[in-house]
Image (cartoon, rainbow, N blue to C red; front, side):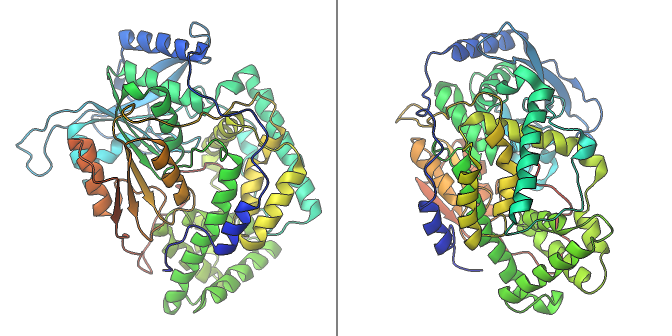
Amino acid sequence: MRAAALYTAAGSLLLTSLAAAPAGSAPARPDATAESHGTAVAAARAAATGVDFGECAGAQNGAQNPPGMECATVTVPLDYARPDGKQIGLAVSRMPATQRDPRNSKRKVPRQGALVYNPGGPGASGLQFPMIGHLPEWKRLAAAYDLVGYAPRGVGRSAPLSCEDPAQHFKGPSSAPAHPSQSYKRERIARAAAYARGCAERSGDALRHYNSLNNARDLDVLRAALGEEKLTFMGASYGSYFGALYATLFPSHVRRMVFDAAVNPDPAQVWYRNNLAQSAAFEDRWADMKEWIAAHHGVYGLGATPEEVQHSYDTARARLDGKPAGGKVGPGQLQGAFLEAGYYDEYWPSRAQALSAYLKGDPRPLVDLAAPQEKAAAQAENSRAVYTAVECNDAPWPTEWKVWDRDNTRLARVAPFETWNNVWLNLPCAYWQAPRQRPLDVRTGPGELPPTLILAAERDAAAPYDGALELHRRLSGSVLVTERDAGTHGIAGGPNACVNAHMEAYLIEGRLPGRRANCAPHPEPKPGAAGRQGAAERSVPGR
């Protein structure tokens, strides 16, 4: 692997020359608004009502519920400025603390309350989180804490959002030009505008209330409903962002917080510039993967240099453009499968093996890996709808196509791997019909917030490392733990024992290292290993 670097040198220079942040009002500051009063009213009501946990109805996203898992619904206002108005229900799951020490099952450990988790998105559900307590890396935390997951507003059973017919969500095979033509751009502009209209038509006036500030307010109502005076929370990726909003809005309600794969909370970055930075970072991660494949040329035969691996990938993309594999996998599906591998290096072996097999005449592994799964269409459409609504509602975006075209044409010259794919995902925000918010200025002063823990992989592409540095600067008393020269998106409870030791010491004992700590990278994947299969992306549903 190369020495760790946030972006390629060219990409880094480019980002400094891009257009100024989209015009908008100054960052919002927490104050005594109608929403803050409404949150207090809703939280008091939730504390009095509590949570009536019972049997879980059906499987969570296709996974069978383990014995002992409980489910419930917590009610929150759709609009916090009107806490007595329309209410919506958030689906919640819980696995009560085992209180059995995994190192000595005869010894009980003190229960420490609820640990609430959000996996990111926007648009991802945390309902499966309590199941994680069965894994060895989580058993100590499962002994001490009730593990609590939930589906944020708009997701799954929590007042679900939709922007289009799910049957139309997976349109394959599709193309994915790294340098699109003007006619292709016009086609995608029309699709983005139509998608934005669909969101407005399907949700009406309610659409504006699906945003990050309301996700943070919902979290406080959930805290109160669980009977917790102070919140213990872990947020990954986007979950770190609204967790940081929570820390800014409700610092006195925080017990402990872990921010995993931290997103840059700078109001000037949310969300247009964050997506530009992400596209630049994915180019570095794609380069990492090509170097790994080249190092195992003897296994995959895709090239002994990164340039040769790129040629193999481009050859496959050109063939798929002429004849989709299995009639379902075109260049767009190929790019999507390899984009997922930019999130998790566990995916590298399966992607390399599928590409190798395809170029040798066997398309089946690639079809199995990348073909759209029709049975997942409804969930995928819902996830993308929530992702779009939250990001578009949260902040101003450029409304003129020429701004998007200029910035991303420049960026694609040095970072072609993800740039235009990222544009097409986010372009509905240029045509958004709901009112925009002003991003909150995430910031806490000395003594306002208990010490918090930030976890980051230095080469994370989905949440570039400078986001963790920025959050560390803004949250007084926070501690940053970095996995050096690694790029997995989300490192809590993963294969790095050093990272896990810091997380456990903090959540179980309240003990933190110095202001910053470093961990060596986890081992690279072994060639030929199966790795994870299929789309398990935790960061950006809809991609």
